[in-house]
Amino acid sequence: MTNLYNVTDAFNMVHPLTLIKGKNAVVWDKDDKRYIDFVGGIGVLNFGHCHPKIVDAIHQQASNLIHYAYNAAGHQPYQTLMPRLCELIPINTPLSGMLTNCGAEATENALKITRIKTGRVGAIAFDGGFHGRTLAAVNLNGKVAPYKTGLGPLAGSVYHIPFPSPDNGISDQQAIEALDRIGTVETDINNIGAIIMEPVQGEGGFQMMSKSFAQYLRAFCDKHGILLIMDEIQSGFGRTGTPFAFTHLEIEPDLILLGKSIAGGLPLGAVIGKDSVMNGLPKGSLGGTYSGNPVACAAANATLDIMEEGSVWESAKAYEQTLVSNFESWKAEGVSNWLHKLTGIGAMRGIELRHPRHGTSPEIMTKILSEARDKGLLLMPSGKYRHIIRLLPPLTIEPELLQQGLDILKQVLSALPDELAEV
Image (cartoon, rainbow, N blue to C red):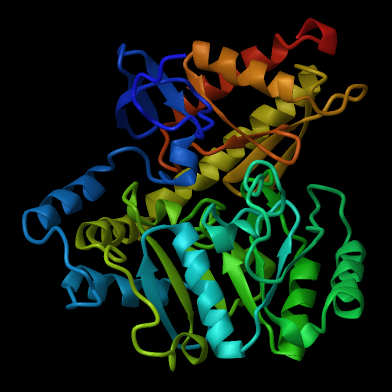
């Protein structure tokens, strides 16, 4: 097959499209076909494509200063953004942070900080978790294929335990027993420097962590001198209906990882944590040439401006209510035997596809993605068995457009065959 664009075939593109423009919750391809976008660049566009405040901020900053490496000299957008981020994060202790190019780089730096501050190299992560594709971050991911396939031994001592959630049937006790097993069978618990978790798993299928287990975990980390790292790369910036998802768990992390929707579509991430963790590191141990680029910082400052508007939170609540009411009516109508349940919380929701006889089916998901796309709706799969539709429209989506997209999804679901042989 001819490689028309000279792009490596290692990409697994969900939708074989070439997009040329976007506006809030709509995108257009090179043939000018219009799609309602429930993917949002995989969680990057919580406030939509080309939000006018973000576009204006980008234009203004690009006309003044496009780039300067913060390691060489400071610049105002960075110095404006970091105090605002620290003030926004609801942790009751002074915070400091650094900006990165993306979420995966935030993960890498959090691992470096952990090793320096604790003197320990071990980490505990969760089945189904996703923290990036770079070499250290990928070892934290809670599944092998495709992220670890062919990589051989990976750096660091990483141990995985089940992710307890009301969405997956895994109990607190199962996770507690697995955690205890690490300290009795796998390694001295004093070798563990950090436990990393998503309050709501993204790639794992929009599953909310058990609140009671999260509180157990916080106490466990305090007891053993372990840093608790909260990965809010996908769940942050309003996706769950609050600025950050960890507040649903009523605990505070030591470090928080940010990315995706932080800058309205420009590459940016952050590691922010308690002063006691983030400061006192060797000079020059953190940083990066493009980390905290001025234009990306300007976009992030505009994002925070948008988050200060009450209309965003009203829209997020309306989105949740519309989705839940539609789903409940679909279940009541018996739209499809594949329709199982909603996962997640707030405006971060997934639709689980599980047939009472056939269980899960990747082929069913492929059919849904294709037929929805043909009808003008872009969707994103997730979950261990590629069995959960990950819904990521912007929080600013127009109500009528949201309903139109859900109506398309209902049509696709209602046309699904009841037997796998017919797929």
